[in-house]
Amino acid sequence: MNIFTQLESEVRSYSRSWPVVFDRAVGSVMYDESGAEYLDFFSGAGALNYGHNNPELKKVLIDYLADDRVMHSLDMFTTARRDFLEAFDEVLLKPRDLDYKLVFPGPGGANAVEAALKLARKVTGRESVINFTNAFHGMTLGALSVTGNSLKRGGAGVPLVHATPMPFDDYFDGDYPDFFYFERLLEDSGSGLNLPAAVIVETVQGEGGINAARAEWLRQLAALCKKYEMLLIIDDVQMGCGRTGEFFSFEEAGIVPDIVCLSKSISGYGIPMALTLIKPELDIWQPGEHNGTFRGIGPAFVTGAAALRRYWSDDALRDSTITKGARVEGWFNTIAARYRQHELFAKGRGLARGLQFPSGELADAVCKAAFERGLLMETSGPEGEVMKILPALTITDAELDKGLRIIDESVRAVLGEPDPDAAAHADLHIEDKENTPA
Image 1 (cartoon, rainbow, N blue to C red):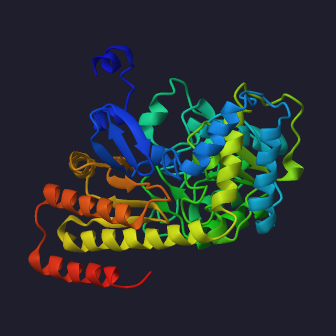
Image 2: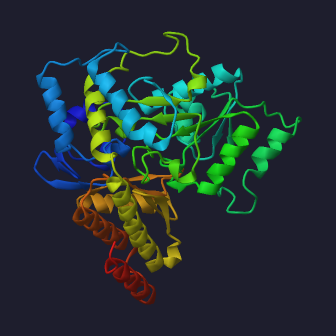
Image 3: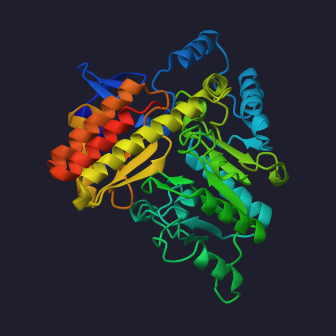
């Protein structure tokens, strides 16, 4: 592995936690160059919702490449681009009665966020944007300005301005009413808060610690935005594409954002691609006013269209994700019940799940123990205190159970054997879960 440490920057991250050289990947399993298997509960940080090298999507991709189809096209019209747009409209927008125009802002989630912020300011003529505590929206300067993590913000090297953080759902543990502080500032002409152009929010904060906003909180936020004529931007880069069950994570709350940011799994195959969805009345761009070289990658269009038609033409994947997510929640609650003295806490929605520990050191130790047992997962949260899992939505029941048992073993390895009485009660709970038909 010397070539990596000699030539790559010290900014490397995941390779420090998983010091092996990976070579192949199929479905929910990765293989290192020696052939050792690792069950993947990371899924490219949410870019591989349909697993590695999904066979149906792979065939479409190989056929496209073999036919010498267009690889790179910026915003020129191509057959692949047309097919993706038709699939997006027919499979996602029309069935949900959503009316959006699509911006292809570039290859990554930060591109989608930057386009959203830029357009919100252009439409409203205002500068300020509201973000939330523990938010993560990307590593470019605009996206960093609405990100909460101090380590990531510190890497900017310049002041991050024109953004004001507000408390995310349950930030004060229920001590204050929802939006007590935010609404007071909006109402008070002496508060010093300029009327914002927009509010940007994740319905589940992935990097922030798997913090899931309640549907009622999201509805109140949407109403507040409407009252004060602020645009509502939903960052669905990691939690969209079915991660929480429904394709869009905001569907559960019954809201319709003004702008939606998508990336990661939108190509279906891990090929870079991003979208910024905007209501038609917001489409005031001048030609070329926002552009980028890599906003027309043919292979991403073709695998993205195939993924939409294969997995979102019915409710099978949505229902499976919700069922599997409930199973994970049951396991994590059981583990937490075994170790009451450590005050563990299960978090998340769908197949975005976390188990919060008292410290980042403990969460990291559990992830290390899991890696030693052949499972890949990461930590998140402001101190890395949350053990975070993002299994592929297509993971089999057997693979999911195998991973959950490894997590159970890893927690035991780090925290020791649980209190016998608490363990007996918790184990009865998990047995009941296992014997209950889905």
